Image 1 (cartoon, helix red, strand yellow):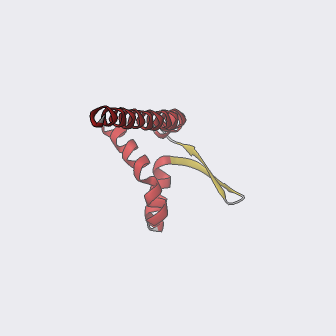
Image 2: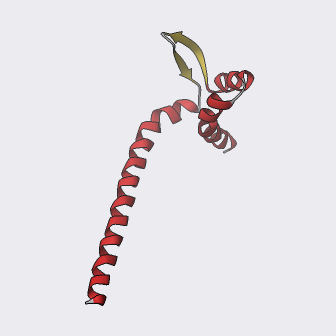
Image 3: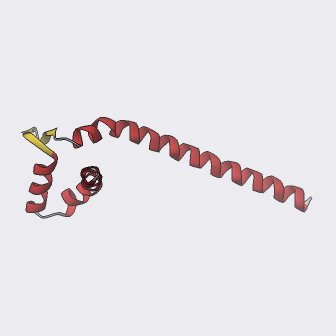
Length: 93
């Protein structure tokens, strides 16, 4: 379980580390998540290590689910607003 927790924590804070971390922190992060680094045309390719391969595989699915969740929340909020407006109209009637 600790491996999974560590993997998610690493994935969650990776962007912050790359944006604000020291060179040493960035090196440690890269060594932790991947191997066989290739820099080509200013783009870094990494062969992900386990368990990051699994995260990489399912990230597109989680992004899709998050977008669907966002749409559902917006839809629910609109429905609540519509019901509130209808009730207000009935009560003020």
